[in-house]
Length: 432
Ligand code: HOZ
Image (cartoon, rainbow, N blue to C red):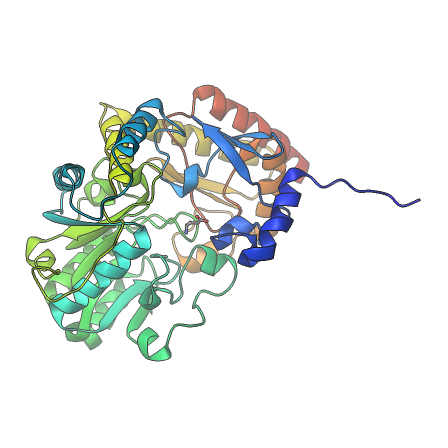
């Protein structure tokens, strides 16, 4: 007799997806390839909870990789989206909401004097690099190994996120002649910056950095690293770009630049400023931004840039996160999670560490919280994979890769965190 094995809905969807979508996903990390198993196909989410096609409900610590800072389907964000959508989905022409967004970004972020809106973080970083090159008349840029700045050609060199997860940190398809302009240094290694600038300083258009890295797991910067970077960029007339697509409005209202007290020349944003809709932005020094078309010679454009529905979602989200004490509460909840997970692991003798910066966190299956790419690469990925699947089975959805950061939202309650810690206690006990 032939045994008929029933597929779950997730499995059936994954099989169907793979027929016409490479790998069955539209962004590599989602495929679960590094952790194994079938990706969850999500159907709906509300607050801190997200539900898949098989009817499983999870406490969500991915939050669409950062944007859902006020929780999923927040009624005020939804209402703003409904209202905007009813007036038209896209005009390909200026709207008042874009001005409102630009004014708000300039008011909230210390370094911003002018802003240009895009449809994604990738577009924002790509455009910021072009602008820095156009402004300085130089070609070389510096990035740091394991930092990910979207998938623009110049930036897919020793990149983090999916590129790192799947072992292709430097993508095929990027012309060697272009990649040659990207110098890759180690994160948190200030002396390398000093030495590199001593050799190439007058040829370097930009340094681009995630001020807190969220794409090789979470790596926090040392103050000396950030300070040295600012100093050499100022000394050599190089444009310092903070990629705050992840950290913006999340680690503090004014982003990492407010938290660490360093003023970059340009910054890039995405995620939170779209409240879950596709958005990006880049901006900063007025003299640099004035080089953009139609005023200057650096071209940059986008049919859906400043899309009215996306602006509405972003503005509603930014309004909510300006509530007094919002970031203190978010940071405290995240701290409760990371401290609780560390304690549970310690209790069961699991090699584990964790940290958070505001509402983003890192979990590491290694002895100490890593500060560098090399240190994070010593993480026990097999242990992470066991943890990931056991937590998933227990109703907690973490990023399906040992090299991604996690995110907490304002909708995560004390009960959510307590339930997660109780699940982790059981999971760590089973991992001994
Ligand atoms: N690169 C983002 C994570 N660091 C996005 C991943 C995704 O959307 O799948």
